[in-house]
Amino acid sequence: MKAMTLMNTLDQLTDLTKSLKTIKESRKEKYISQLNKLHSQYEKLEIPTNLSDVYDSLCSKGKELVKEIKNNKSDKKNGDNIEIYIRYLKAAKADFEGRTEYVNKYYRSFIFTAILFLGLSPQYFGFVLPAVFFVPMYLGIKGVKSRSINGLYMSMSLVPVGLMTSFIWIRYGVYAMGNYQEAVNKVIMDTGRSLGTAKALVTAPPILACVLLLVAMTQLYRGYKSKDLFI
Image (cartoon, helix red, strand yellow):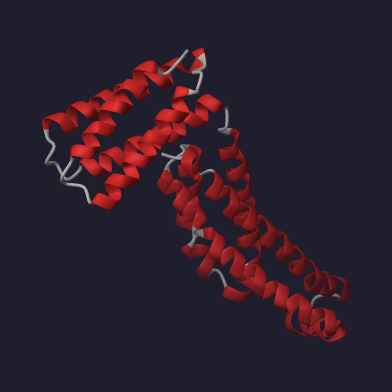
């Protein structure tokens, strides 16, 4: 099924956007460019019959937006509404192209980053830092599952602290490699653990930190690549 109805709506929306005076020229040019690009992409797209309800919803939202703008061209919210609809268009296109699996890939990267961050950060930062990021992690989990753009941003906030935690442990690992016995003895003195446990505590965290670094960078990359899949 071709997206003829949607392309007609995009043509109307593009013309209306050009005539709006309440949007700054830079934003207007950005929206027009994105709408033209989406028009070209949807023109080549075949809508799967099993996703006809998604397509119908997209067309309906577009027609409602066109009607709202025609009725009140001076509304300052028109720009924001156009931007939101563009996000819907991009996300729906990913559905039609069968690319939504990338959201799951991003979600897995985010979960692994969160687990490693929670496991490694208390040794240096206590439980305050993990507690501070509990809410963003919780909102991130809910938001990513529902493909919310705010959920994406919340989950991405974990990347900087994940990288910071990994860098600190990797630096410790470099130190421990050159002063292994000293590092083991210090762990024994500080914790009272056995020699075997102390060696594990010296060796394991830096290795896990390397994994955290890799996973956090993967999350950052996948988050950037999948940003158009969120609404």
